[in-house]
Amino acid sequence: MSDETLDLYLQQGMYGPLETKPDERHLFLGSLRERVLLALTKGQVLRSKPYHEAEQAFKRNKHISLLINGELQYQSYSPYVKMANRNGVPFKVVSDLQFHTPLGLIIAADSAVNHESIYIQDDIFNRSVLKS
Image 1 (cartoon, rainbow, N blue to C red):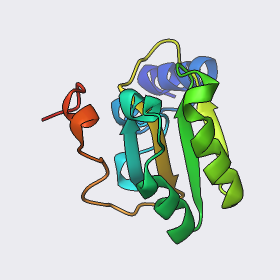
Image 2 (cartoon, rainbow, N blue to C red):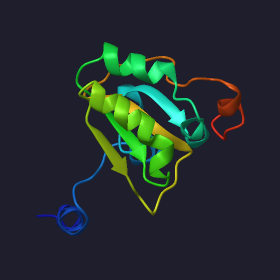
Image 3 (cartoon, rainbow, N blue to C red):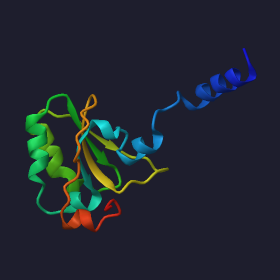
Image 4 (cartoon, rainbow, N blue to C red):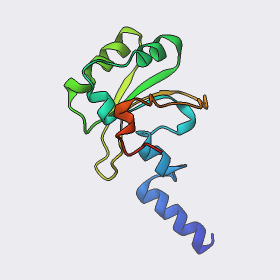
């Protein structure tokens, strides 16, 4: 076994297997861009009225999950959890203290869907750091 192979083996033993696209996974709360159906910024999740597009995504798609940024307070995302529960969609609160993302909520498929537009580009989105 070469030194390089041995080092890789030891690194994976200590820190876990290598992860594909780590920066993308940090941005999208552990998911990949190709799986995202809808992404809301933290500010959009804080909006008093939940987005209708989220309800549509829950109703129209199977084999999806709801990923929620753990930095948010429960009362801000509880309407989305209730929507997910009504539609039989599992959810997970993602807390990663090392990395911060401007996204507050992701609705992601179990496999690649490659949706071209995943953001609701309203006034709240336009004030976010994601604005291009």
